[in-house]
Length: 286
Image 1 (tube, rainbow, N blue to C red):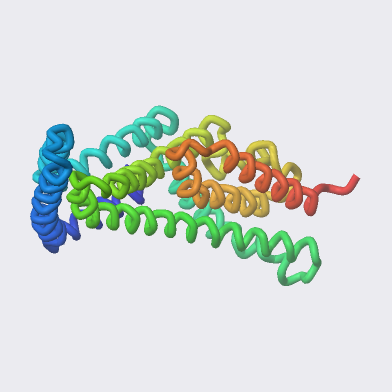
Image 2: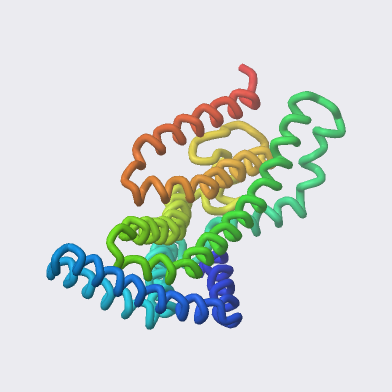
């Protein structure tokens, strides 16, 4: 299980232990009953529309089943997506969280070579200072991005977990179905975060760029930053990996909504321009 999945599981356990889930479900059951009565009244107001009455009854029955076992159903849905993500990770990387492993490797490299790599800031040379600055930025940005991703994943999931009963309780009432559909869309987007995370990790393993030693041995990162020093190479690679983690929420939304082409084109174009610009700054003369 990935670290951000563990954080979310801990958050759900805390919410359940505090009684928030039971309270929300209890209130939502009364709301669901009210929506049923409203749907029956609306069918009667339309001259005894039996079709509308039947649809309302089916919606009420289906939502009621989910409401009774809400916590289990939510965890099962999330667990199904997590299972697929972990299967991808296990099949490609042997069950190792590639991004977490990169952060650990990066920390080890920093402990050994960090101070030496920052010598350019002391000498005052423009190229050396710029290399040291990018190196420092890469080392700082990646752990921060990783931590923020885990935090926002847990926050997003907790919000969906708590408000879910209220939204689903409105589903039997005509006119509120779009609200329930938007909730389900957000639930799919949230669960897609883990899938994209594992896919990015599998890609890193496939191109043998999943470890610090692998990048240093290849002396490039996915064909970019050829000819730069080892410390700078890791700093720039960490910035790109931070970008990969950072775009997961936006990419997940586009994937679920079916509008991924334009978003990916813009992101790839931006990444290519940034990569070429950074590489040109440190390209060897001649």
